[in-house]
Image (cartoon, rainbow, N blue to C red; front, side):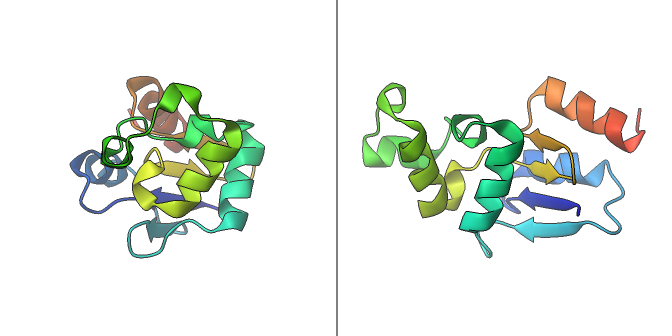
Length: 117
């Protein structure tokens, strides 16, 4: 299994995806086809944290008046299922690995995984 979850309106996501040959990967645009409960559970199994999957840059945080520091793991889970923008992206999942977000370390790990310099 190889899946990528991304947002097509996100320039950073598009730049990251463009670096890799995604032949054979299921590529999902999360606004059009949001993450399911089962998929989120699968991501959680690999990260052991809903907070690690949560984008603290989501515009929904301010719109909803959320205090991120007071959220529990269950709150993070519920928010991730409620709105696509809460997912830190892109997310690459393989049978035994997960790469979450666009920080430099994650992108470097992705490049190593794909064998790209």
